[in-house]
Image 1 (tube, rainbow, N blue to C red):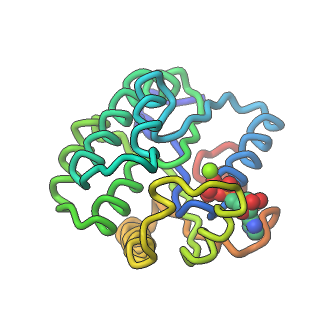
Image 2: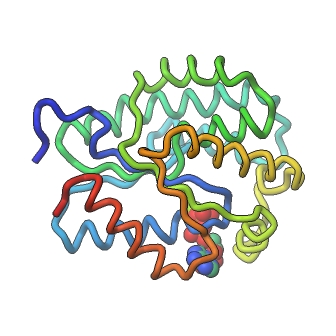
Length: 214
Ligand SMILES: Nc1ncnc2c1ncn2[C@@H]1O[C@H](COP(=O)(O)OP(=O)(O)O)[C@@H](O)[C@H]1O
Ligand SMILES: [Mg+2]
């Protein structure tokens, strides 16, 4: 049960890391654990999760489109604002655990560290888009982008982001690690080359501890 003084983000969990890191795999494991434990939860993703977000997702992942860094960030922010307002906020208010596949840290890593947009601008727009809603726990699945791209390639046609050069993906990785170093209490950084079952156990332990699920 939530307490009236719990911070609004107290049951909000996000997964971050490059394509192919194992976010979807681990979210599936976590969802199963939450089901078994009888914890009400909602699973969503960025960009997406709302009718607007789904349309934004089609646009930002379209390999045929060239999108400059600023409009790219604003598109993600539009999806994020709608998702927080319509989906994440209401679920947290109902006392549910919310698990989100990517969130604001992805913008800071991809559009900030990766594309070079100003971190102050990213943070102020993100704050406006989310009302300052910050996860209680962010699982960062850290992986060499070369390995991530290999894993993702095994899934089929690369999307627009997967096609970007390795220098970009190296900057994104460093960006994620810098964010984690700046907020060690929020981030759980895991080596994504560990076996999936082993990672799932570590993540479930962390979720139980941080969310006081017992
Ligand atoms: N810990 C792991 N070790 C090795 N391969 C993994 C691991 N986790 C996931 N994979 C594989 O890597 C690929 C990408 O996993 P996925 O969960 O879709 O990543 P993401 O959602 O981060 O893009 C899939 O083929 C998956 O089976
Ligand atoms: Mg995925």
